[in-house]
Length: 339
Image (cartoon, rainbow, N blue to C red; front, side, top):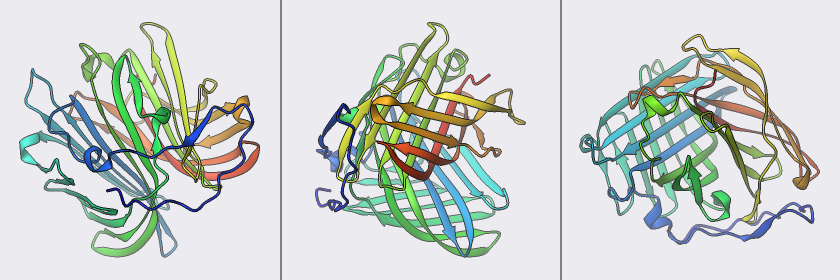
């Protein structure tokens, strides 16, 4: 996978005190995109897509998580969700199966189950998924820039070391079929790849009552993409916030941003959670203030893997970054307590 093309876009000017790095390139995508054959207790592939066609707007998500521990048989959790953003029509499914029930390769990215097929060869990626009353088929080319979290990939998840990177701007085309009616679509896909350790004595059904986190993935009108997160551990009263920015030329900016400002909470009708509908991401060093709106829809998924409740959905962005006015969209994920 060394043939990924280099973007020709020009990076915006940065504030002089921004903690920037030279353009970062991932060293071994051919190894890191596929499954690692049980080398890590957790592996994840997460695709989030905004699609449009014939005046209609859709969002589509795929999240595949593999958990392998010594106590239990390896499991694969497959989450799918398709939303018609204009009508609110939603179809979703979440299944947990033994890892042996899916086809997965370690030499190339290829994962197949009854409802999902993911393939990537060289720069060509395809994804198809079947949901109740719906079918989605998409293809596109992976390319640069690659967003490598913290500029080097290493992140800490409640003390556990993990690795995370993303393709924030895969241009895709294909079709969405709803109730037998097929609509051609185009759009942009954000693809997160993550793996690593699980926290010590960590169990989803037990630990998520004491923790919560939000992950924000905005793509902006000037070609800049961000991966920002905030994690709360209520037992220790610790809050950690991180942000990685990637410019069109691959330059990474890593900053400890100010704590996120969350407001306009709404009560879920499916659980006892409360979720914010407005987030402010700001940092004076980056001359940045992004107003992030999270249109509320019934976007909770209760996973069969530990009873985890997760909210994910689309975001709309307006504000400033590096002093320049921008707009954008993207995706949000909220997991944990949220009460």
